[in-house]
Image 1 (cartoon, rainbow, N blue to C red):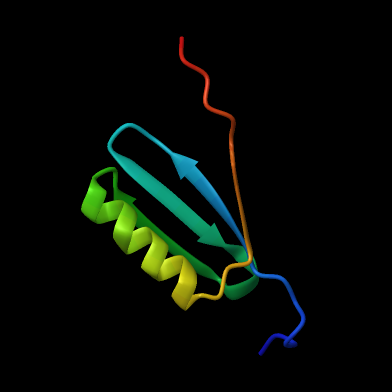
Image 2 (cartoon, rainbow, N blue to C red):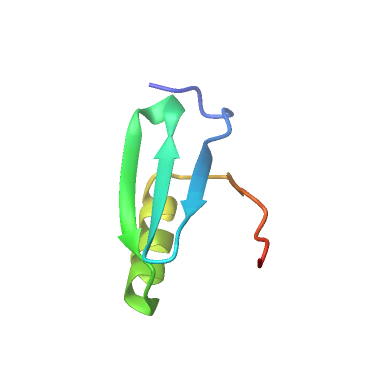
Length: 62
């Protein structure tokens, strides 16, 4: 179990059809569809895992 003051960080990989999320410190991994429902589920999941920060790659349109 982590100490109460440890920051939980999620890494997010955004693709066209889905979003992959990983929290290494908790050994958690999850995928969500790139839909409004999927985004709501992602937010619920991040809150449940008590994520304090999330990082993702910069978006660049080609």
